Image 1 (spheres, rainbow, N blue to C red):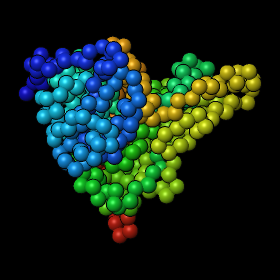
Image 2 (tube, rainbow, N blue to C red; image 1 turned 60 degrees about the vertical axis):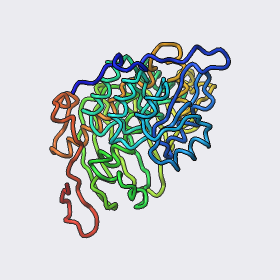
Image 3 (cartoon, rainbow, N blue to C red; image 1 turned 90 degrees about the vertical axis):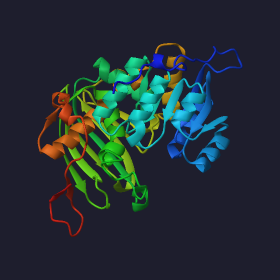
Image 4 (cartoon, rainbow, N blue to C red; image 1 turned 45 degrees about the horizontal axis):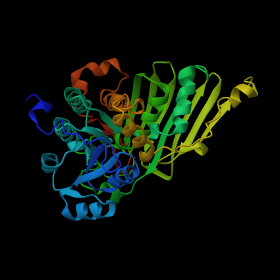
Amino acid sequence: MPLPSPADNPSAERRAAPADGTAPLLRAAILGTGGVAELHATALRDLPGVALVAAADPSAVHLAAFAEAHGVPFRFSSLEEMLAAQPVDVLHICTPPGGHAGQAAGAFVAGAHVVVEKPAALSLAELDTMTRAAGTAGRGLAVVFQQRSGTAAAHVKALLDSGALGRPLSALCQTHWYRTAEYFAVPWRGTWATEGGGTTLSHGSHQVDLLAYLLGEWSAVRATLWRQQHDVETEDLSHASLVFASGAVASVVSTVLAPRQSSLLRIDTERATIELEHLYGHGHAHWRITPAPGVDEATSASWSLPDQEIPSGHDALFGEIYPSLIAGRGMPGVVGHPARALEIVTGMYVSAREDRWVSREDLADPSLRGSLTAPVIDGRPGASAGAPAA
């Protein structure tokens, strides 16, 4: 069935009046009032020209508590009810990933831009549907990869893009997080059907996205998936070799088995080593640029992070999205390439499934853009050593 056009919905072109000191320029709404929605509401609170006007959640208890905490005036039990009754300029989707594609399509038809938590979709095919719907509606789609944001990431990206640090050669991209059995007791987690994938998709994709934001287009990947501890369908550990178009080769590890949690990037270039270690967000103190022998002090000093610091986070990301939308420029460059991280992650799952290197060009095949389901090597005690488990 073809997607409906925004013209089919009389609310599609409703827009707030220009800011005059009393009226917001953009009206935001949040779908889903769980933990991550708190980050969205807090980040929206102090943005000029923006008002959080509505929230929707099938749980009346969760919805009431959220709306009271954040002063949200209008409450709805479903997205459909909200879009039919309340003009929305930007919808923030904070629901489990299985519903994102349909929810985004509904928002675009109603004339709203969409800011969606990751994973943005359960597959590239679903994300393709979301991207097409955004294009049809003339609206923007932003995936919340907030680790791209902040002044440090922007500065390092500019150095790499300019060639000041020389050619990137090798990299490490490691997500060492820790999740308990209670975390996976949430019904939609740990299954291919409702979460889409395991730690590679749901946790490691943040660091993978930041690495790709800094290094640009990728070309090929080879990966293995492991189940070392948790009683889930998906993986709790993955290893991959990731090659970028520049020729740089990255070792990528994602796990939820690390009691000392850490998120790590290291990029070695011809002229420097870039290092970042943090957990769920970074500021200037988390970054270090070490010059190669022979680089003079004046040159290395020019690589220093700027005096003004904006840490990464939802605040920083939304602080770029909303001014760009208000100015009529659409979504900003910091949220460009919304599919790149999911492409790389999809390549990892396809590689594990087909036991081969997977190129970016391979993923043009529609048959590889669907379910991420792949064999997982079960390393738990009592499992057949090295045996893949579906």
